[in-house]
Length: 341
Image 1 (cartoon, rainbow, N blue to C red):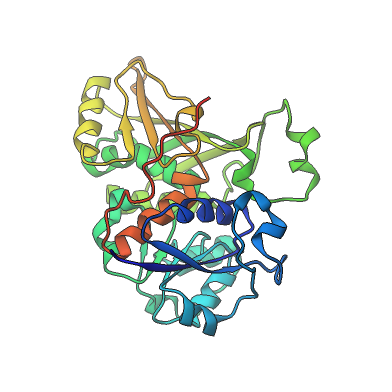
Image 2: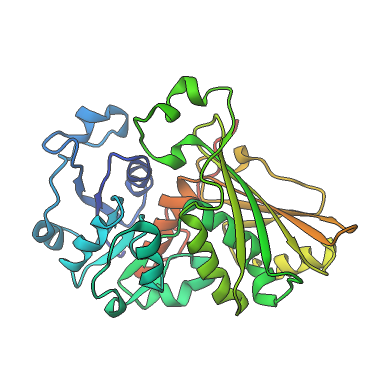
């Protein structure tokens, strides 16, 4: 059996702890390194007893990572992951931040206001296995997609690859649980501000817009404009994206196209017309659900995609990518059913 020594930098964030939970039950993985700037020197059991993990949290040390790990997961602020990657030229790295997501570094620099030196020399892959499985297998560096882009891109990819859009504008109304924002101390993420409340944030200018548009252009072969409005809803986790686009295909034709496209995928579930998913269906799992409706009066196709932002939208997908990097079955460690209710 392949034995993989895994490290997590930024383990005490939401995605880091979700990674710890998944990897702890992965039959091929031994967790050999965990790091947290905030809690360095303390054990995981001391900081978060529910993790049932007694490893001591360390400062980031590239030399020790290289000695102790076969793969490193980085859950760090933008810019920090790339600097660490440069110190680990032979390490397999899966970055859950934005530093390795873009083909064009100038897009990252414009939206994140940071410069990535020598980025064009970096051999990397965009870590969406259902679309780039072969590319992921051939690299050491993987940019794990954002949670919203994962949901949106998988929801529209078959139509884009088929060229079945009659208009190059896509409108996305997406709603996410608060964990998607990460651990925040700001007032707007406090209980009284979130509970029994629903609000839009960063419409049009959200940083996931350029990520989605770059990948859609690759799939479609031409520029796509995404109008994106995300919302925070008073729940812990989950994403539901409602996507509006123009297509001449009817619902039955779309359903067949998606069934054919995702027939071999373990984690993508295409629902029959008239069945619409809820976020509870994917809660705590790596599974995603997609459904459709069509307003024939104006040729508007409505696609609804649902996933767990911390699993398929982040840590579960990162483990999918790790499995590909080490040539083990892609679903290893990820077959658990959703938590329900």
